[in-house]
Picture 1: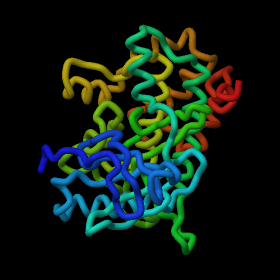
Picture 2: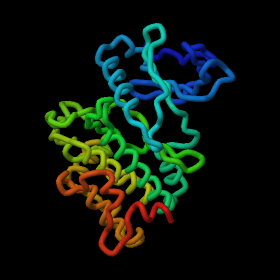
Picture 3: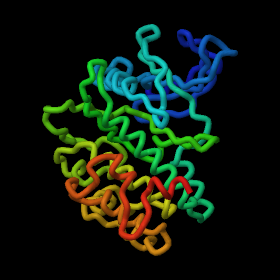
Length: 300
C-alpha cells in the first residue's frame, strides 16, 4: 500500500473530479480537483495516504484537522469548503491558492543567491500574523474560545497567490486547548518541522500560542536573510541552535533591515515564551527602538 500509484487523471471521487495529484506528505496527499465534473470550479481535495486509511490514530487526527480548520474564517486562512467521506474514506475540500508556497520562494532565492525584498517579507509577516490572530481567537458556535494553536507554521504552509495575497494552511497537527484546560505538552515525539519549533516544544515543556509566534518570526527572518535561520550539520545541531537562541544570521543582517525590525523579531524569537509578544496582534504592531512596525513596513 505504501507504494500505491496515484489515481489516474480524471478519477471521479464522490462529487469531485480529480485532475492530478499536487503533493504527497507524510500522512496525506492533495489533488487538484473540480467540483461536479470536468467543467466545475477548481479546488483542492486532501486525502489520507492509502496506508493510513484504516489507522484509528490517523483517522482521528484527520477528523480533528477538519473540525478545527472549518472553525477558522479569515481572508488569510485557506478556506475549507467541506469535509466528508467517499466510500468510507475521509476528505477535505479546500480553496485552491493559485501561486507558490514560501518554501519554494525561498528555495528559488537560494538557488539564485538573492534575498527576497524586505517589503515582501514584511507583507507576508503581517498577513501571517493576522491569520494567526484569527486562529488563536477562533470560537465555537456558542461563542466559547477554542484556544487553537496551529503548531506547524512553516514556509511550506504559507502560500502567496499570484495577486499577492497570503494564506496559512494545513491544520494537520493543530490543537485546541479551551480556556481552563491544562497547557499543551509536546509529548515524546516532536511534531512539526524541526527547524521551526519553539524551544519549549523541543524540551517538552507546555506550549501555547506564543510557540506559533516564534515559528512565524522564524519564517519572516528566513525571508529577510534568504536562508535558514537555524542551521547545523544534522537535526540535533539545528535543535541545539534553537534551544540556545543562536540567531547569528539575523543579527548580522540587522544593519540593513528596516529600522527597528530586528528588535521586533528578536523579541518574537526569545527563548522564554514570557518574553515574547503575547499575541499575534501585538507582534504585528510591535515597534523596535526608533523604528517602524511590521504592519507599517508591509504597506510601503
